[in-house]
Image (cartoon, rainbow, N blue to C red; front, side, top):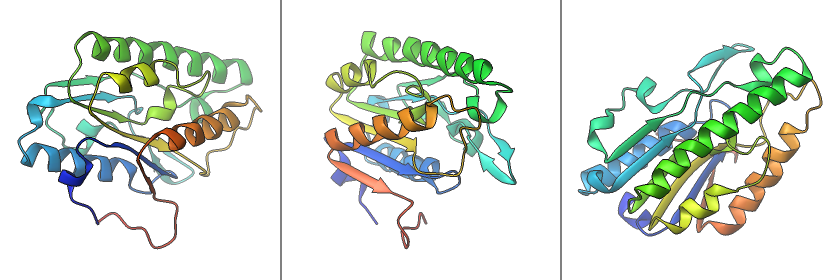
Length: 194
């Protein structure tokens, strides 16, 4: 499907629905970089919520929940986030969780900006921009040579309280797609992560 060496120096976005393999593909890329000897140049910001089940499907999952060893990279920052559309019980609670997530993710991005590395990987970047825009993501991209991120896109999670999160997430993800070099869309029929 790809050779990790071909992604060095690129800006890559992996998009897809829940359970489409975004995290697995991200891990394959990270392990590919490590095998190439770049482990000490990798910073990972893990915005994904801990995995849970929603409507019978696994949602979320930090890299360490996939048996990733954070000692293999320069920096691994797990951010405690909450899936707002899944756990929020009313409109205000959903928005409260989304704003809380943005603040926590922003703190992690600032840690990277203060101690950057050549390779930045963000697991579940769209948790950051459920509310707001790309903000500090753009700044962080300027500090790295290689950028790898994954984002939920066009999936089944419903915005049952009409908060605007789903619309914003889609629009900002589409904006991010326009400024990266490579997009892996796992929603496309026939695309499989092996």
